[in-house]
Amino acid sequence: MTTRPLFKRTLLACGLALLAPLAAWSQVSVAITVAPPPLPLYAQPPIPGDGYLWTPGYWAWDPGSGEYYWVPGTWVLPPGDGLLWTPGYWAFLDGGYAWHHGYWGHRVGYYGGLNYGYGYTGSGYAGGRWDHGHFRYNTAVNNLPPGRVHGAYRAAVPARPSPQESFYGGPSHYRAPTAGERRFEAARHDEPTHEQVEHEHRAMGIQDQRMSHVHAAPFTAATPRPGGFGEPGAEHARQAPEMHAPPSRGPQGSAGHAGPGPRGGGEPRGDHR
Image (cartoon, rainbow, N blue to C red; front, side):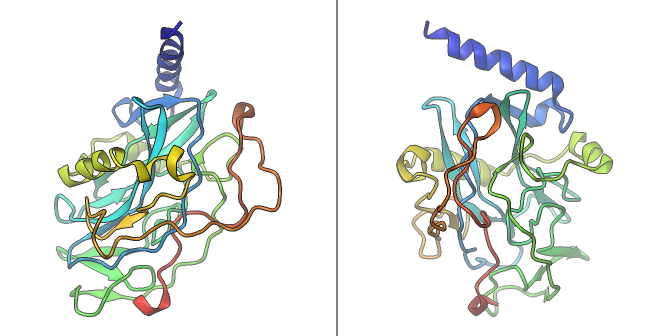
């Protein structure tokens, strides 16, 4: 009897791998029937120094305990010049949710059309650009204390509604990938750095990051650098708006994500610009 849920998940994973048109097999893992929680609201910590790139937070799945835990957004040093981060994302397909890993590449690929905030509006990245081997930051969407970066510019980023789902597919309102994004996602990319992997592993071991303990409001929502859970610049999740209507029903009759208004990281506060 104890092997039947595992067998069902194995079959689901195989089915998703065979049917998923959005990514190569090597970039897709974890297939479950539980919808990921809403993306929490949080402020971006100040950049720790020049050369760091912002990577948004995400809900990861712990197969050992069978629950989600929040991996905080954080500033990361890229593994090479000219590289940009494509965030990971959850996609609903054929009755289950599959996780598509994030990766480094020379352009930003498809990440579910999700509005992760701080330049990741659902298509590409508006938080900065490489210029002759140096990364220049957009002050409109980044928390840049004076004197910490050597190159910056300001370009308005159009406001975009953030539907409450934290996954692509099913009844969600996020866009599908373009043909170019499909090709780029299926190509070979650089893996997350060692610091990023350790950041996720550390989050998994902290009770205050687990869905069962925090109810979609993780204690540490963002950190100034990988693993910086206890640092002064770490940010907690903000209070979500009060819900005034019953939650909708998600795919396959599962509970939807309650709460009106946008989810995910908003724009930096005015005193940080």
